[in-house]
Image 1 (cartoon, one colour):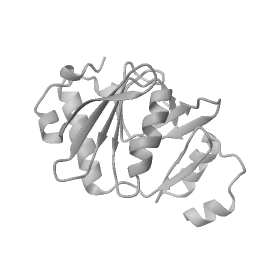
Image 2: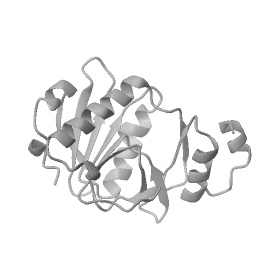
Image 3: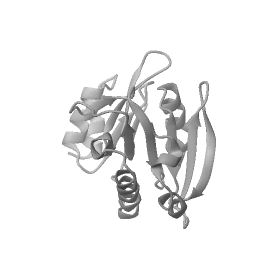
Length: 184
């Protein structure tokens, strides 16, 4: 089913169950919804994007983060400030403990979320998701640009919003230890 066909039969309020059904019907797009009900439809990530995510995942695992505490492209339930419930699919997630098998996992045990910015997702990744993840209480949020340096901007949660902790090339990050970033 195409995204156009999915769009023609959209319910007035999109739930996480609706999102799951849409993703099952359309394997060519990634669907997310904000806690306010704003639907985002994105193409699947490209090769360079996937390689960045894989390199970070291997670095985390080799650095001592248990493999069952790390996942790529898994759904998170994101509670809204006004009571709504959204669903985001970060590129990489690190949890403090093993999670139950589900499509949409709670954000409560998340230590780190990583978003790799793709063309067209800049605003959602650098502003919208940053605010949603802060509201959900996720302690760290890293944004990786697909520029020549693959710049990583590391955000740490303060009282109610993120502050920039560091900005550096991905190669620099990969030559350090995950323990240096207080991931739990």
